[in-house]
Length: 176
Image (cartoon, rainbow, N blue to C red):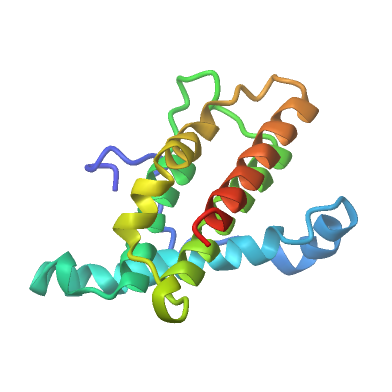
């Protein structure tokens, strides 16, 4: 991973905290009840990506189902715009828990809505390329949410991330 210039250079499929269970009650108490669920979702997405990479190398991305394409694209968002860090930037050398939680929530919401859209019944079913085209501005906002400076007031960061979360939901509802 270091050779690919991905820092911190950890293997996210085998590196994890042993304190998740112990801290889950604390997260619920401070209003972050979905924090552990979102972490679990991220781990599953990254594991799915690892499994799908072998298929992609053999037969290409075009042979994948829409749900698998969603998993690959969201895993890329997680790796490149959530996990990757640059300690020399003012927004990336530290990340308060409320910002981390908000970013987790936004990406998880995007993932779950994408999965629902590609698995929708009948003519409501969508392809990932259509979703990506329709939500182009929101995807750009997802990729830049890590750029919120950690020294901004907590309420400003939380409000911005909640607004993005709500905008993604509205955009998906506009498909209907």
